Image (cartoon, rainbow, N blue to C red; front, side, top):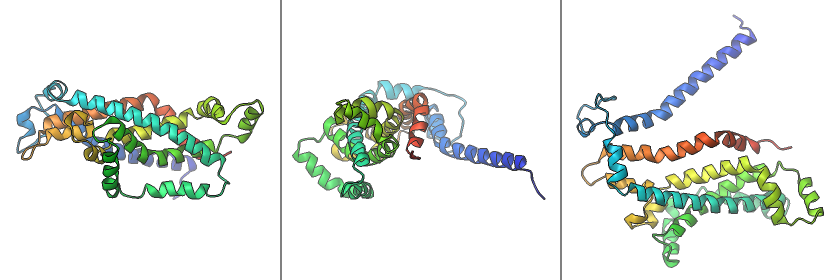
Amino acid sequence: MHFSKKIKKRLLNTVTYVLLLIASIYSLFPILWAFLTAIKPGDEVRSANPTFFTSNPTFENFRSVLFETQFPKYFLNSVIVSAGSVFLSIIIGVLGAYTLSRLSKAPGTKIFGVSMLLAQMIPVVLLMIPLYRTMMNLGLLDSYLGLIISYTVFAVPIITWMLKGFFDTIPVEIEEAAMIDGCSRIYIIIRIMLPLSVPAIISAGIYALVHAWSEFVLTFTFVSEDSMRTLSTGVFNFMGLWIVDWGRLMAAAILIIIPIAIVFIFIQKYLVSGLTAGSTKG
């Protein structure tokens, strides 16, 4: 039995959309469960026979998290650390990516670039002791700067390679023409490379933001003061030794997700173009 190309294409599209729908449900189900748990009364959350939906929805857990806990302080800490990490990661990543792109034929450049990626394969937990001792000797424990530096260290290699792929697509002739007019390298990067690289930079910034916003191990290791905790570690206050406050914990989880979701909604078009910008050259 032979099918026409039109029927085959329609069948392929149908299968594709069904698979995407299944993947979306699989990905969004935990978020839906967390939200439904967050709006349940306490007795339903702790029920021995939990139900998926509730007949008595309440936003008491959200109110309690926002006004009766240190959640706003944790949120502020996360914003400060994430913004600082993104800013510093982008600066270092742009300079590193530009260097790797324009000096790709120089001796040792490829080895250096590959070494950065290989370093990403080392589990973070193996670096905790030396990193902790370094931060302690520098007096950076329980500080914004310590977290920003540690987040940046782990974000820069990937960001550098993301941006390098885009810089490789920008013709060198544009820079040569600018240098003939007397422009310096820094001027070229600021006035030429950066404006042309906005989608790629936004994509790299999103990666750094998500990494910093959700980082747990580094913060849990370097921060002991409750006032300096970020959102990822602050939610531990809802987990006791013998009992877990699931209602407020799920409410806090939803509140943590919302800022990142809003960012994705507003810059998704730049994110898609940035991720595909360096996939082809020429």
